[in-house]
Each structure stands twice: as C-alpha cells, then as structure tokens.
Image (cartoon, rainbow, N blue to C red; front, side):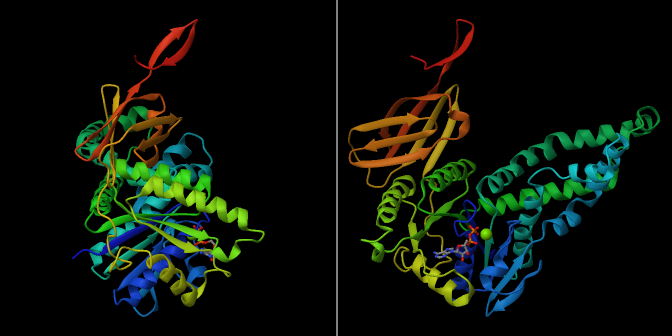
Amino acid sequence: MSPRTILYTGKGGVGKTSVATATALACARAGQRTVVMSTDPAHSLSDSLDTQLGSTPREVTKNLFAQEVQANEEMERHWASVQSWLTDLLADRGLERITAEELTVPPGFDELFALLQIKEHHDSGEYDVVVVDCAPTGETLRLLSFPDVAKWWIEKVFPWERKLMAAARPFAKTFLDLPLPDKAVYDEVERLVGSLVAMNEILRDRSRTSVRLVMTPDRMVINEAMRTFTYLNLYGYLTDAVIVNRLFPEELDGGYFENWRATQQKHLKLVRSAFEPVPVLTAPYFDEEVIGEQMLDKLGDAIFSGTPAEAAPGDILFDTLIQDISVNNGTATLLLSLPFVEKGEIGLNKIGLEVVIRVGDQKRTLMLPSSLVGYKPAGAKIEDGRLRVDFKQAERVVRGGRDVKEPVA
Ligand SMILES: Nc1ncnc2c1ncn2[C@@H]1O[C@H](COP(=O)(O)OP(=O)(O)O)[C@@H](O)[C@H]1O
Ligand SMILES: [Mg+2]
C-alpha cells in the first residue's frame, strides 16, 4: 500500500517544522516506519531534532528517519541538461554566464524538485508514513497547482513542438545561429513532467494524502491560512486538520499577558468559524523552545489529545472538501458544507475577498480566490444540506472616461 503522506504548511515561524516533526515522532512511536523531510529552504529540522541531518534520510530514533532535501542537488538530478542548454542560449545573447545560469531556474522550481522526493519515497516502498515540512504557504501552492498545466502542455503541445523542432533543426542551425534544444533536453523535460504528474496524483489521493495548516492565533497569520485553505479546496487537495500553535495558557490571566490571551481566544473563534468542521487542534506556548525528542513528544501529546476519539496522529482526521467554488459565465458559485445547517436567516457580507456568512446563529468566514475580487454576492440558499452562494461579476461601465466596476442588477 502506498504510504500515508501528510504535508504541513503555514507562514514562516508559526511552528511548521516543530509540528511536522512532532507528528512524525508520534507516528514512529506508534510503530509506523516514518520519514520526515523538509523542503523549506530555511531548514530547521536539524535544530528541531537536535542532530545534524543530510540530504538523504537517516534514522534518528527507532522508526523515525529525517532528511533535509537539498534543492540544488535535486536540480542537478532533474534539470541539468535543460540548464546547460538555457545557459548557452542566454550566454549567446550576451548575458554573463553566471547571470545566465541563475536565470535558467524558474522561480519556485527548487522547491518543486525537492517535493519530487515524495514520489521517490512512494516508489521505494520504504515507509508507512511520509511527513513533509513544506515551505511557507504561497510557494508550495503555486507549485502544487503546476502539474495540471504541465500535463496539458505535455499532451497537447509537446509532441508537435518536438516534431517541428526536429524538422527545423538543420535550417535553424544555418540561418538562425541559435542553439536548439537537443534530445537530452527534451527527454529531461518529458521525464520531469511525467514525475510531476505522478506526484500530483499522489497529492490528490484523498484516501492517503492530506495537508495540515499550521498557524498562530494572529489575525494576519489566520488570513493567510484561510487563503491557503481556499486554494487547497480549489485544487482538490484535502485539508484534514488545522493546528493553532502557541496559545497562551490560562495561568497567564490576571497578569501582563491577560490582554494577549483575550485576543488569542477571539482569534481562535475566528479560526473555528473559518475551518470547522475540519478539526481545529491546539498547542500551548511552552515555556521553552521545542527542541529534542522530549519537547517534541510534549508538543505531539498536546496537539493530538484534541483529535476525534480514537484517531491516531497519522490517520486521515477529516475526509471531505468543505468548499467548492466554480465559475460559469460570469457567475461564481460557492458551495459550503456546514455542519448542522438546517434553516435560518442567511446573512452575507463581502469586503474585498473576505466573505462573512451567517446562517441562523452560525457564522462562517472565508477568503475567495483573488480572481473573484470584482464579484458581488447575488444570492444565497440552502441546497441539499449545503449552503449555496452565487456571486456575479461586476460589469465594466465606462463613466466619464474612467473604468468603473458596477454590480450587475
Ligand atoms: N508551542 C510552542 N511553544 C514554544 N516554542 C515553540 C512552539 N512551537 C514552536 N516553537 C519554537 O518556535 C520557533 C519556530 O518554530 P518552527 O517550528 O521552526 O517554525 P516554522 O517551521 O514554521 O518556521 C522554534 O524555535 C521552536 O522551537
Ligand atoms: Mg521551518
């Protein structure tokens, strides 16, 4: 059976590495052969486990393997031919070789190559559980959505392009003075796209793979996690838990931190309104850093004591996509699964991309994808136990020479 794969993401500094490592350790303690790998170029897995790690997995304690994936090594393995061809091409155009070499790696590709390690762990059959400590939010997402585009390209465009290039080669060499990509370059791109497509299938397998969002109870951090959640739903990636880390404990009431605690509790409510019924797990702000197995055990215990009854840290803790957004002819439709939703007055409020929905005494908050910034709510109802909200695109109206956006009546 393919391994269970859990990806942790969230803004920098919120505790991704600590939570990912604590999860992996908990799985290892439960007897599952587990690997935790970090693809965040800001590696801190070594610090977290308090031991020096390399780019290949090493067993750090019984059943727990850890690795800090090196993007440049992966690049060398997957991209060398393309890189040398592009470098020649750019250097021919008068660019400094060093600058040219830097330009041959599209932004974000390094993490993409690092993520390919997931596929290798799946192919190897070595592990029961693969835990990934990802780079912060935006990056990973953009990369995760990439294989769809790549797949289209490889199926529709690539075969033609390749034939045309083969036919044009003798002429191009003579007349254009351009270094054309050779077979090695094409083979490499084809292999790479094939791997990306396979990896995308792994990530989209909701019976084996899920994403967990780590956040602190701070407004900006939560906003970003909400955006990520929307995109994950959009791409069909399952989020099976969110973790709110660094909550000030009750003991702090009455002291200097009392205000902070109140604010955090308010933000925790916002988290629930944005993510439930996805399980919201929490961990306290400990009185020391989370370094080494003992502290990691403590963090793991705190987080997973909040899971639904009898669930283990490596289980799929929730199994449905609760948001579904589709766009058709200028109307965007949002379908939202709400627990316990029956009837009730529906209230809707959209400010920028944030939408606040009230149904009876329940409140939901979510972030729309940025492409829907010009859309306005046009109606809401409860349909088959789900809340359906329609948004209409604002029409462009030219007024006094200026482009003004107006809602469709
Ligand atoms: N619940 C917590 N209590 C106390 N310190 C924490 C907690 N979670 C994380 N830390 C500490 O915060 C720092 C950042 O955590 P880390 O997991 O590296 O974040 P990220 O990977 O998101 O950048 C580390 O020094 C870590 O030990
Ligand atoms: Mg980290």
